[in-house]
Length: 303
Image (cartoon, rainbow, N blue to C red; front, side, top):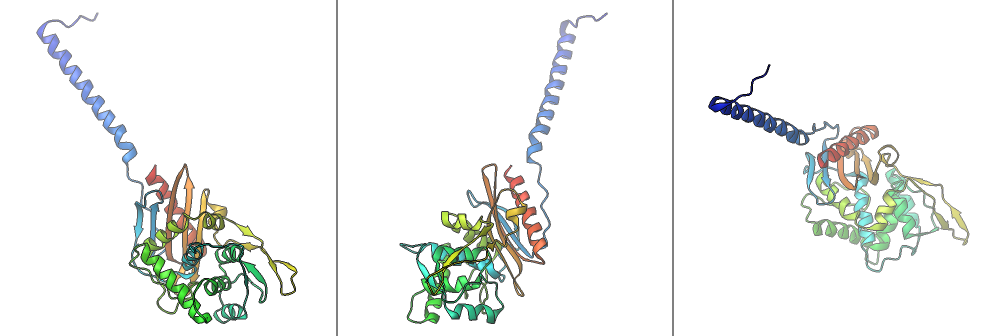
């Protein structure tokens, strides 16, 4: 039989019980409130440098030697494309005749190429796809020659590289310098994971750029010297993340003896976009694994 608690002693017991219950509730609520704030484990990457940010507001999500200057390989071509797409009154259907100099250049440098044929007329739009998908240094040369200023090819190329450096300056990047239009540098072509990410984020504001870098394969039809149509072999995007990481929307690979294996990447999930860079990884599989780790981490941090 349970007897009702009455009187002064009963009041004290009731108050003590109420305090105990309230304290327990506060502790329980605190535990639940703390759960979402638990730290996400920071990933370890093979690459010597890495950076990830929230593309919506530029806030930093991850850094590893993010401001250390390194060779960038063909990730340089992000800026090449950005400069071309920023030209006033740009006509993407403008035809450019492929010169022997472009072909000789890629052969001499054992460079990645779009296999452009000397004498063919290729549109600027096609050159941009040839630049960004197979990482064609011949396409990069054609664009630099077309959109630089000067009476000689050397002067036009120098002018175009000047535009690349002006664009970096306009973005207030302190640790970036270009001495080439394609990443085959002359000892003074460098950037950092943070700076490259900012360049890519800026480039991604352009709808044409976004359309190009998320394309897995593109087949160009060029005009030959005789006026006939040549159907080029399909250009395949070197960015394996487009096929292996859900939500990937770009951006660009790079590699070289000095640069190692580089990747500028971006993905959108749940309406949120993370964008970042890894520089100087040790292989194609490792740069992609690094990028996936960093994107997973970025999305986890954003919730």
